Amino acid sequence: MGWKLYLQPLRAIADIRFQSHECLMRLYDLQMAYHEANGTFANDLDTLLASASDGAQLRAKLQASVDLGTLAVIGDENRFRLEANVLDPQRTSVKIRGPLGER
Image (tube, rainbow, N blue to C red; front, side, top):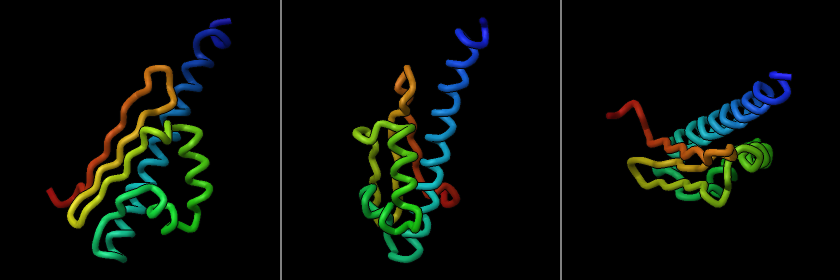
């Protein structure tokens, strides 16, 4: 009974958070590859997903784990920012700034 009422919902929330983290880290990798190819970071999600061979699958995973209405992809020549709210009960806000290795 504890599994069904307590642990199973907790595991579902943890799975959504983990999937959102994987997707955002994939976006991070895409930003780094986009910068290497173009000399600037992508400034919107569509541009970033168009540069990926698995863009449609990544969009579907993002849609299942984050609120696409709150997903922000902001980039310029030197840095970028990824922000989104996770589709969990707390609407956890996740922010990633990059590139990390140059600070």
